[in-house]
Length: 259
Image (cartoon, rainbow, N blue to C red; front, side):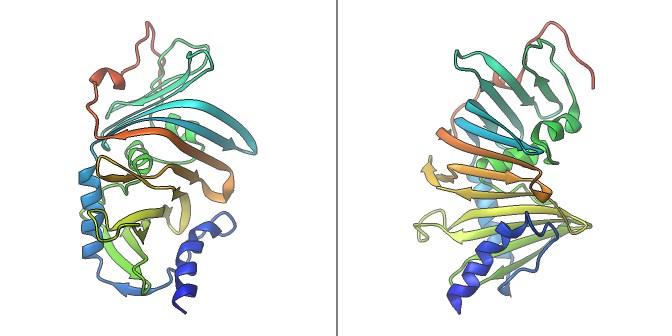
């Protein structure tokens, strides 16, 4: 019976492509406070990330792959993603400097500032820049103080934390880490966000490894509602909590495009 309930807890996120509405959570309700503390501890332990990744993007049935993508995260404050060609040339660069989303497209030296709409177009789904930082770090975004929290667990400590604020709901799926007695008792296996019961996106994590005392996922699979858009990031190299230069979160150009 325990095994069946654990399988249900893990498999439910896999069903969203066919059933994008918000499903019921298996397991018994449990105190949310200790699990919220675990998520906060994981957020606080993460400061930065420098990584090289392979990225596969699917939009409306069309797949595009990038073998070399540099990803730099400054906690949940700033972000840079830049795809490079086989000769090391920049193909596309996206920067969030904490205020604006900056975008440089192939064969275009202009720097556009398309805002959140531009980020949505690049990703093929609605994912705010701060959320994207958290997702790429394998963390949950910091919840609003107004969010109501619930937790549901099965007997072997696999749990789901649900955070609800108005029509917005976020669910974070936690599994015991391989060394559950160590400093990182849980790992985030999946998370998803809903608005008015409709799925906005879901994330699945796999292959966690330790870097600078924190758990980083090796593979991050992000999917939009109905499977119309998907993004799979596979870290080839990843170093956590390294010093970052402010220049990493700028894009230089002679001209600028408008919103």
